Amino acid sequence: MATRMEQLQAFLQDSPNDPFLLYAIAQEHISAGDDANARELFEKLRSEQPDYVATYYHLGKLLERQGDRETALFIYQEGIEAATRTNERHALSELQSAKLELEYD
Image (cartoon, rainbow, N blue to C red):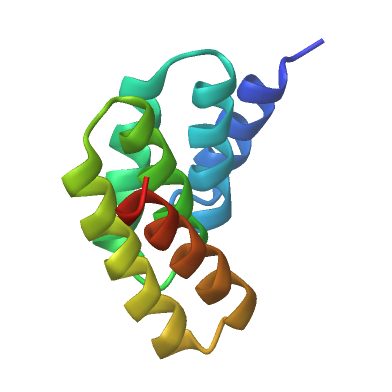
């Protein structure tokens, strides 16, 4: 039986530009403790699909875990702008909270 990662990779073969699949694979990398590959996929999403708002929160958290506060703050701000642009209010709230928490931590 194929693993979840294998299944997602197979789906990606059919839909290589599907932002959800890239996001899901990045999340699988995080679950496996592979932040480097997760970051690479999040950066690809950020570059190629800038309105895929979920990217920013999880990339920011990854950067926080790596101790890169300044870049995490920048990513959260980018996400806030994307969420505002796409009118995704729940994501906007989460990104604002993450940014404020990091600023005042």
